[in-house]
Length: 463
Ligand code: UDX
Image (cartoon, rainbow, N blue to C red; front, top):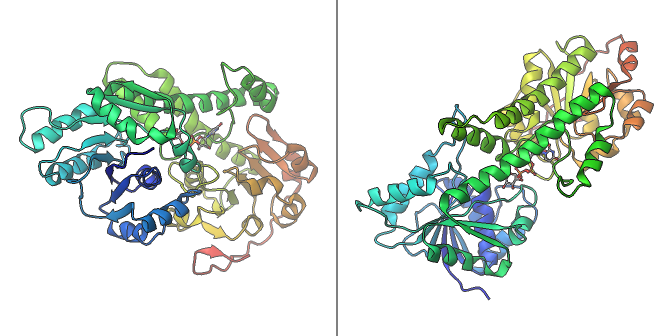
């Protein structure tokens, strides 16, 4: 049974929106606040601003049930709990930028009007941020010391399964100096019957960073092993599979590819790396994790250049732009780095993604977008599979072979069956398997004339 509480959620980005909607589903009265009026108007009209399975239905359900409202006003005075879910982007040095957190805290201070809701911090912020919030709020209200109870409650939602993750968490972490405040927050989650870790604020904040850094380390580890497999001729697929059978290692996050992207892993590893460095540690492992991740993108450029001779005026088609399947998010996506590096080498970049083309176009207006993989592959000198969308595994390779300028596929997510690609007459690069069939590229020496596709109003070229 849920005891209904009044919640204000500040920030309607990824975490804030999912939390606001899902907390309403748990039975709470939620008002979601954002300074972006356009976003608030959309959400208030039942239009989700992110693509996330299951979110739209719940959003509309609770706009109708009356348990969820959206506003630009700082309605925090009547709240039992204020959830802070604003973004903490990277500074150029890699630190977490707390500008939005500070601005939100200022607004809380100005608008609580003597009330003392429990402040629940969900923004990923450096270890010690709960203390900073405590200090800022007290100073804001002209109080000498501690005034609000603050609970650090990091989130572990994955994009593409955030709603599912919310209702089935592996754990809930609550860090507070006041056990009563932590238990009050735990009550909000009572219907989830999840395991709860009660700890102090700094430890809670560290748990989030350490968890994401470990996942990133696992990915960089398997990518490094994949590179060694390429050198020695071992099969990375079997290596990863057999490693994963050991429960101490576990099978998840052992897929080699283009390295980790998204809004969390890269930013959080950079922030932890910075935090370690400024606190006198020497985070060599984290440095290596970041370095391997950046190299994972760069080595594809080298492979394409070596295979094609030069990338100048070559048409390279990116299949997949989102940082992973199931989302339209391109933040820190490998495809973003690849497009930038390719264009820097003089290549002409064509692209297709089932969901992420609009945002990619906004970032790279010079990249031509196409309505499907085949349209994008026309006259290409190489196809680069950058996101493992399911539809890429079943591509008609004979059809691709006919329409491409040069038969070269860099399967950077290992989604295609290698034997099938080679049988179809392609040269093929796989992560951990290296390049094979290069003769196919060298045989096709004549260049066809590239036709410029007509572009329709959405920025997507017709086939
Ligand atoms: C991550 C954490 O998993 C989540 O707990 C946290 O709250 C937010 O950050 P998310 O950013 O949604 O979630 O993505 P995730 O599924 O973790 O994948 C991150 C990146 O790693 C993706 O770019 C993905 O392609 C890559 N990845 C993942 C690999 O390259 N190999 C793998 O085996 C797994």
